[in-house]
Each structure stands twice: as C-alpha cells, then as structure tokens.
View (cartoon, rainbow, N blue to C red):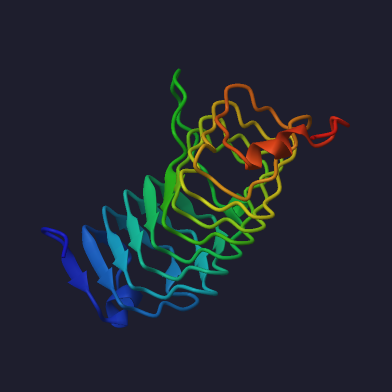
Length: 212
C-alpha cells in the first residue's frame, strides 16, 4: 500500500467522485462513461481492468498504473502528464489521440509517459514527439513509429518484433539490449544511436550490399 493514500475498491466511488487526489484504486473493472470528466492527481491504479473503455475529457497527472489491463482503450480530450505504466497490458492503443501538453522551456523535456515491463503490441505512436521516452523490459510487437521523434529513447531489454520505423528520428536512441528490431538506416535518422549484433545488420537494408 502507498503511504497516505485513500484506498478505493468500490466502483460507486468512481461514479460519484470527480477529482481524485492521492488515491489508490484497486481491483476494479472500469467500463465506459466512468472515466468522463475525471481528474486524477498523484494516484495509483493497481490490478484494474480498463480494457475496451472510452476515456473522455479526463486528466491523469503524476499517476501510476500497476498490473492493469488497458488494452483497446480509446481516448478523447485526455491528458497524461508524468504517468508511469508498470506490468500493464496496453495492446492496440492509438496514443496519437491523447492531448500531449507542450512544455514551454528552452531545454528538451522528456516524454511524459514511461513504460516498464509492459505489453504494447499494435500500438500507434505515429508523428509524436517522444524525446527520451523509456520502454524498459517491454514487448512492442507491430508498433507504428512512423514520423516519430524517438531521439534519446531507451529500449532497454525490449522486444520490437515487426515494429515499423520510417522517417523516424532515432538519434542517440539506445537499442543496445533490445531485440528483433528491423530498422532501415537509409530512411531513419540513426546518428549516435546504440545497436548490437545481430539486429544491427538490419541497418544496411536498402544499401545493396552483400554480407559474406
């Protein structure tokens, strides 16, 4: 249990409450309409099922999801700010539908969402600015990263089988312990990125060379 958090285990509290501050939400099945115009601050979801759920006009700030199923969730006018997913199922999510808040600062700011030991198969990140995002110990099968900024991204121990990179900024990204990625070195920016064998061979695709 997180210290000084109000424990919520009854779906009625989700229905009747608009703002949640320092709440621990446990083992709930959350369905459509329950996450409309809600505000979650410094809260954690544990063992919750939010799959195939519509989330509308809601904000999650400084929140954490642990061992939750959020597969096929649909977002409309939703803000995610400093959110962490740990051991979650996040299959088939279109992350481009989220309202990503721009931070007005002279320095580059890390992407406001991080993923640890999670499954993100068939997710869509097309065109997003994901500077310094973390995908740690995660599975990203057939994920779309076309036109995405992944500069300084960390893919530590992650599986990128059949994920699609095109016109993607991968400068200084760390693939050194990632596996099963296939990246065309001629259609993506890879300067300063870290790779390892044997997957690094994929970088020469399109160069018309013969490996012997």
